[in-house]
Length: 259
Image 1: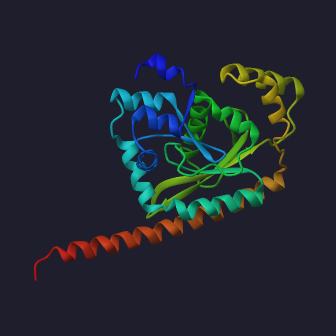
Image 2: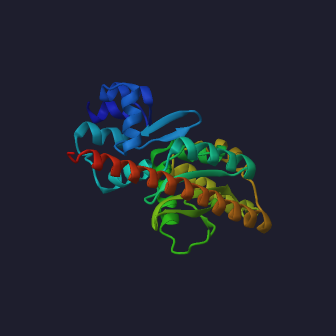
Image 3: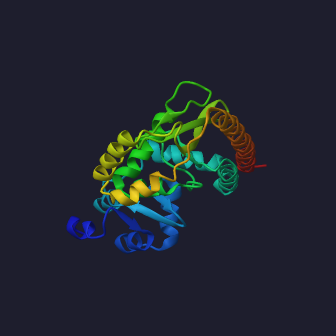
């Protein structure tokens, strides 16, 4: 597949487009997502994939690496079918977006309660990568407690660490809000810059920005507390699953011994 024909698809590809380009079925696409060979983003109820990801696969330049191996190991310990609904309920209660990401900022779950503003940003390949970089910076924070900081698009985010057996396994990220009402002139300049950088319709972006909530200090403190409690729940789930897997390995090893 030539680069020219790939560009005809646009910045992000649908699951069906990736199937056609790679000549695989839908199940294989989901398996590649799970083991880290392919990175995508959930927009509404549908997956979208950066063109560069598929180009790398087609060229053969994408090979298993440390990040992919770490992602696979994380998914073995952290059951997403359990994590996702808890995260969804957390976002429904707080009315802000949340996502569980690995230590490199790559999302492990679907983003819960995504605002229209972030959906627009993430429709662009570079915008989506900007989100991943922002989540990666959160994972690199040294403080144990959540600390709210602005992302690449100017919205506030914080994270709670998810540690299993003393090892940082993932982070739970919460955000997509302002801490104060933005000044009109500064907001207009920021949105103009984002629209130009990520090839977005400025009017759509402005309309979406008007819906971004502004949270006071007390609400942020409450969300911060809930964030740590939910992350701790994920730690407990991961620890129990890790213990179970270790027990199964021991049983498997015992079965290899001859009587």
